[in-house]
Image (cartoon, rainbow, N blue to C red):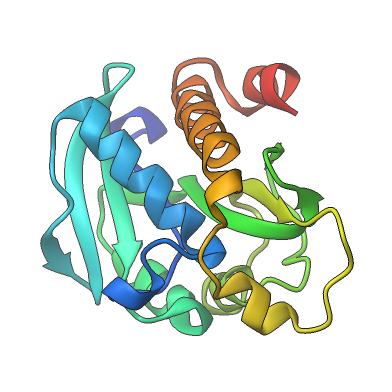
Amino acid sequence: MESLSDKKWLIVGLGNPGERYAKTRHNLGFMVIDLLAQIAQTSVKREECRALIGRAEIENAAVELVKPQTFMNLSGESVSCLLKKEDRTVEKLIVIVDDLALPLGTVRLRPKGSDGGHNGLKSITACLKTQEYYRLRIGIGPEHPINDTKRFVLENFSKSDWETVSEVLETSAKAVSVVISEGIDAAMAKFN
């Protein structure tokens, strides 16, 4: 019988495909996947289930790095399709998203939870019919109130934000490695 250790980690960064969204706040998930791929010296370009996928090894574990190409609101369709393969399981799924409720530069790991109003998480939870999957939320919240949240998340980061963004991407990549090597509780203790 197959055990959990036979399963691959599925690390899914959420974002919107296409050049016009590449540097937007809503694409932090994609940016973390790109950084993990760069560190692992792999590329994320194989097409499966309306997603781009790259194989990697992180902390001696087999990992698939995933960027759904369905646009944010339909991310769950891609993720649920990927999880239908035998060597993948929701117990080894990490979803990486931007979070307007957290200040820029902050990360929060959770073993499960609500979608917090995030359309990508909403779609994944609806398609998987569970909230029981790991998520890494990365803050994009501004220091000032905003009127149009949809416009805000689809805007590029400002030049002054990029130093913080680079740091939080590094932190996020490390957090994913710790989840894989030491488990979610150890990672939460280190990074939350």
